[in-house]
Image 1 (tube, rainbow, N blue to C red):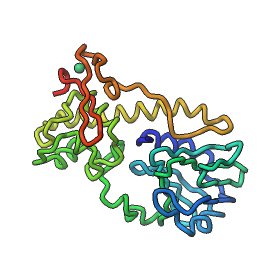
Image 2: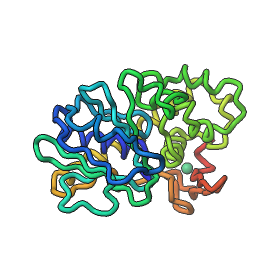
Image 3: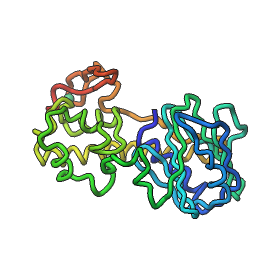
Length: 270
Ligand SMILES: [Zn+2]
């Protein structure tokens, strides 16, 4: 499932194809994904010039000179294909630019979404209303996290997965960041010192940035025809490594709660 770094990599891969280009064709090939695709998407996007690509949480944002933003979510299996040789049954949106470049949004499981919003009112877009700060943005600080965790008895892992606390973090990156910061996933959030919160923030940024860098190096592959954006291989410190030795020598443990796995080291995470 694409997480924040995959979405960021996708946005960076799409930017050179789309930014500054006029869209000569915007063709939804079905009426819905996870939810309905706006009926006026074709009309509002065709002929518009793309001014900027960016990201909020796990949503990619395509701004245009008409004051509209097309918002995409990759769901479980979504990916953009650049200059595909053929358009397939799972390509649910086809976009063409005035340079003749073709993009297809492929989503076999259709858990993704396509929406339109006014660029000036993006913060009113329903999924964005209650979102916390971006983990890579300037508002995500130890002072902020200290306030957000104050008096909270919940496990730190649960709060980091709460999108109201911080936007766009998924299970894998939370496990990785807690391992890097040497903080137990079960630790009561309100009882973590400010100094350890600063370490945690640095760890969250480090695991995201290293994954984005891995995605960036895989971007070279996207230059080829039919290049696909959205997925790349990563090496995890703790995630998926049950029974393997941590850097400290103790085995990585795994616990499953509400269908979600936590991987951690009981020796070095406290
Ligand atoms: Zn360890």
